Image (cartoon, rainbow, N blue to C red):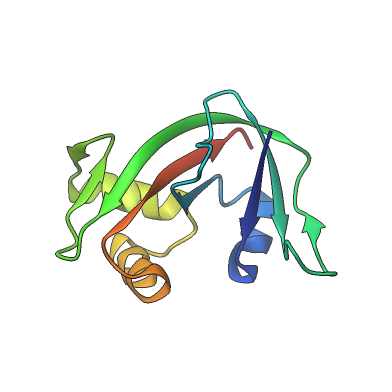
Length: 119
């Protein structure tokens, strides 16, 4: 069981099923394929709320975003088409918007995991 917390800006998209993946910082106990994900907004607050019933993890891969915006997934450099696909699944308008958000929110380099679930 993995507890996944979302920023408020993504909560509605998760609840509607428009956002079916998240990219999170690397965890002490990384999420595993098939593990059930508990999707929440407002964790550690009195306003915490579950966005969906538990969902099984359908895909997981390591991701690294370098300061020069080179992106590695599973150790391989990805191209612009795959970056756009990842960005859309994650609730962003474009790959450029996603990279800018990660730079502003976490700084670069960013090391984490892509986690997808069955809608």
